[in-house]
Length: 241
Image (cartoon, rainbow, N blue to C red; front, top):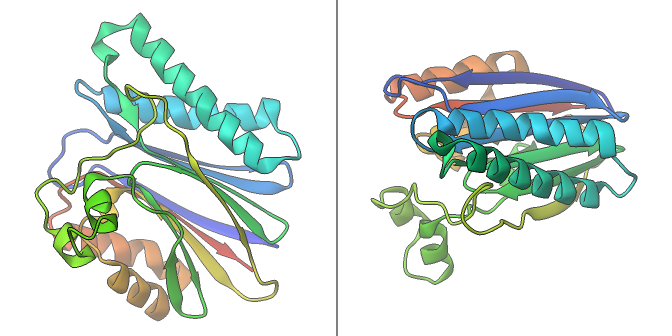
C-alpha cells in the first residue's frame, strides 16, 4: 500500500500560541502518525504535546515489536510517565496534559490509539466514518441520553475532556484495528478539536467528497479561518492506495 500525506498546524486567529503538535514517520515498513492537543497554562500545553509526539515516536523506533496494539499501548503509557516526570521536575509545568491520536498504517490495516477529544476518521466510498469516540463531558451526556449530538455542539462545557495524558489519573487508551479493502483509494483524517469545533462531520464528508487530495488542506483551513479559527487547529490527511 502506498501512502501520501499532508500535515497542517496553525495557531488560529484568537490564540497567541500553538499548543498542538504532530509528527509523521516512515518506520518499520509502515507509517506512524502522532497528533496531540496540549493543555495547560504558561505554554505547558505546547510542552506536553511536543513531549508526547517525541516520546511516542521514539518508543516506536526503539521498542517496536510485532504486536502492534501492545506497542501502541506501551508507547502511550510511556509518554504518560514522561509527562508526569517532567512536570515533577518543573513547577511551571504542573498540570500539563494532552490528547493523543496514534495511528500506525501497515499491510492494509490501521491501528489506532486514542485519548481525549481529538479525532480520527476514515473516508472511503464517499462516506466519512468517525473511528474514535470523544473522551469528553458532553459525550458522556450523549451516552446517557441527556443530550443529542446537535445539542452537545452548542453546550457550554463541550471542551471539558475526561481523559488526557499527564492528567491526575493515568489514562487508558482506546485501541482499535481497522482492516482496509485493498485496491481502493481511501483517506485517514486525524485532527484536533480546533477543526471539529467549527466544522461538522457532515461538512467534512462533503469536503472530502468534492475536493481533490491536493486541495483538501487549503479548503479545510480556509473554512476554519472564515469561521474565526477560535482555537489552534491541526490535522493530518493520509491518502492510501
